[in-house]
Image (cartoon, rainbow, N blue to C red):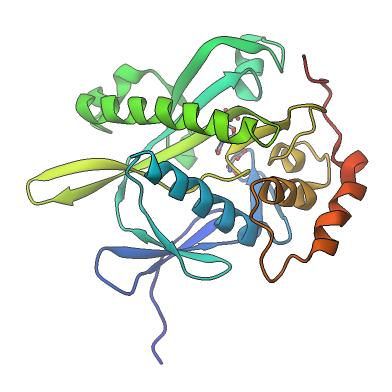
Length: 268
Ligand code: TMP
Ligand code: ASP
């Protein structure tokens, strides 16, 4: 037996060398961090749930023609993905004001934005992932203008698709973060969707009650984060597997009150 080689350990995932060249294994941890890792904790079972949710979302996105790094899920906590060079930009898509934009611009949380906003942050922990202007990206060589055109059009398509996917399960997609990677083919390269899409990097509010079903429960000490992540997976139809009997699914209803915690009741 040989020990597989660890390539990188991030805040919520570990990357290992994959079985074939050009592949990587993404291992999803239960570790949770917030505020640039100033706050640390664990959310029991988060890795398992995020692996399933991300598999589901990436598979659905590839069906509508979005190129992604996802190949297949390997087991409860791991998925096989294409190796790519991560573009050092965090792409945040916002439909409703929440989080940093409310503080930066003094906008009330929950306000529907007049139109969808795309923001770019430079991925650098030492700098605290600063918000950047789009012009900085080509200027500092982080991505080319052509790549940014592909990235922004993919981000809009992903948002349209995900808004519908979540609306169908009574969840409002408030905002989310995407990461993209570059893959090389001879002299050419193209960008594909990478990283993960899960309640760690999305704001998801129950359409009817305003309950937060995402990492804000951890960031803001609201409690009930395990139940919230499971609720998203359950509504997406992902909990019928061997580890989730009907009893467990029914149990979630008893966490309803615990899941409440939004200071902002939904605007109808
Ligand atoms: P923000 O309101 O804190 O800027 O976050 C916007 C969205 O991006 C939110 O859905 C959470 C996600 N996000 C991450 O995935 N990673 C991060 O490091 C940050 C700051 C936000
Ligand atoms: N994951 C980020 C961190 O710990 C921040 C966040 O998601 O709020 O730095």
